[in-house]
Amino acid sequence: MKILLFSSLYPSSVRPIHGIFVETRLRELLKTGEVQAKVVAPVPWFPSSHPRFGDYAQFAATPQFEHRHGVDVHHPRYLLLPRIGMNIAPYTMAQGALSTVRRLQSEGFDFDLIDAHYYYPDGVAAGLLARWLGKPLVVTARGTDLNLIPQYSFPRRLILQTAAQARASIGVCQALMDSLHDLGADASKLHTLRNGVDLERFTPESRSAARRWLGLPEDGQYLLSVGHLIERKGHHLAIEALPALPGVQLLVAGAGPQHTALQALATRLGVADRVHWLGVLAQTDLKWCYNAADALTLCSSREGWANVLLESMACGTPVIATNIWGTPEVVSTHAAGVLMGQRDAEALVQAWRQLMAALPTREDTRLHAEKFSWDATTQGQLALFKSFA
Image (cartoon, rainbow, N blue to C red; front, side):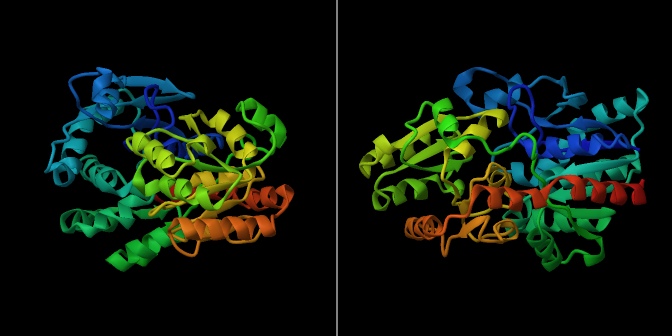
């Protein structure tokens, strides 16, 4: 079976951890030997790769084609205009990718279905391509595409049209499929296939060794916060909790537009000496962060299925997280960690104290993560794709 994976959420040599969960799901599927795949990952057009343009420069620097982990990845450009970009993005994305997709077909890759990730604009754009080319479509929802974007009437209408066209919609958590059903989608087409965790990459290691690897003192307690440095991820709440957690050090792994503001917040609260900025780390290096910490915190306001939670648990480190969307499906036992009562610093402090008062063993936390291997998701995908191809 041949599939065309379509999504702007796919890593590249320029942005190696961007949408890595999409790449990981595909790589797990390819391991079965029952699927061939090529990837079309559109990138907004931008005229300059000069670093002063930040993320936009990365768009320009992305190669048109690359070969990643044995998979051909194409990056056609599309026009993303300010102000009206949200409404026209599906159309410009589809038009920008069409010639690339047709070329792949002419070169012999006549795929059986389109496997799209992220409902808007990617899934809607893939729906246009599927209609133009007469191919079946499956769309996977991943979070903001269904827990935020449908608040806007025009995108919501396009999402529902695409859900009606698609042979199936997949959610990485049940909460996303419940949301799509509530919007009006056909329940018989909705499936939940949760992201798994790489249990070979993320493994328990010596906590002392992990702290040495990071150049940290081996004694004391460490709280870890991982993710893009934006308000939605809630790193500011972890910093605001520190004054009430004397002796606790905070590790922050990630980069983003709030970096300067977060540093200023730590200084203003008098905790700057207890915050360690680790920057963006490769997946292979993140393992040492999880192992160095006593707990991971994820204070997000929105998440579909947060992979960092399972990665931390696979390393034997329990989590503290906001009680949103798919997170309760992950943090479901004492061994996994604690859900915060609300999204604020006080609730984080209370959750930390609750967790430290009855800390699960690292072995039990790892066992909880082992329930979330990729096997079930991979087999679910194969069965679903074969029924439509």
